[in-house]
Image (cartoon, rainbow, N blue to C red; front, side):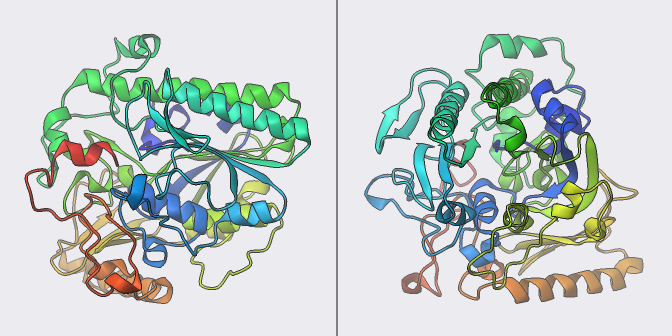
Length: 466
């Protein structure tokens, strides 16, 4: 899993600027999902959904975790939740994580993980980063992408040597900012690139000041792509190691990201919280999703199915033929048939839903409707004729019936799955971070989200750790 990588930032999804030969090769040996969506376009809630199969309005994780990562205030944001790693561990898998956790209490192994090498927060420097190793905060020398890969390789090797089935979460911080400090050999690959995939236009009217400091800076664009290519090299190292161990055909390999990113797209830098109010642009919510296991999954296939990361947990458990001990009210469904057969399944026409606090979205194969509670503004896009989402049709009277129907579907779906205590539509989620868990003691005021007030409300320092 990468961090802040949209589909547009990968060669196999059609970007000629991006140098990602190993990810592209992985796609050629498996199935690429063209339309895979994160359920919330920011890291912590998206990662919570991957792990639990539940949306933010069920887990209570609505924003990137600003407080509670380490130290005396450390908070386990998924306490009481069942994750797929809990289930894998129960069935005998050895579960290890190497890299980003960012779901609170980073110093303590949890949810079935017995191997724990995690980032102290959600982001930080690429060189000499602070990680949790053997239960201690430790500065790890060298380039963090390499260190994450080295640790994962050691974990996999130890499991194979012991004859233990394993699950490895290899969670890179790349290509999250900072977009400096990357090996020059990767930066130099982009010296002559025009970056046509990253238009640097006029700033979006809702953009935060990360956009102000980054828009038009080619060196930072090069840094983003260099981080991606350096990570791609290490994806190649992982695959090569599986081959060396003789277990490639016995190993399911999944490549994805927590959320998308805009590198000038729509006039801002960032993801869902790159604007306020938060956005639901395709470049923020669509992420790569590639699945490969030669001999078990077809090679070189592309699927157009609309699926979300709340579908991931049911899919993984279905693929492994494992039962969820508490399946009630999971919003997702398995898309194993789309992975294991050569035909497109009926899930091709399914609708997906997103949320980021009071901003919610419903999307079908052609139309996207974004509803913002309390103040708006709402949006409607015809993605068939306007794939760049430039023309908001929400106030076009000829689409009034469509909006009414889509809004009702949105309300019905979230009413079915949301936990009233955690329902995001009334929460003051600003995109500037979550400060604590929503609990009985702070319900209903739930003052656990960073406000927009103060001098750093839209400051770059708020975005660096997210």
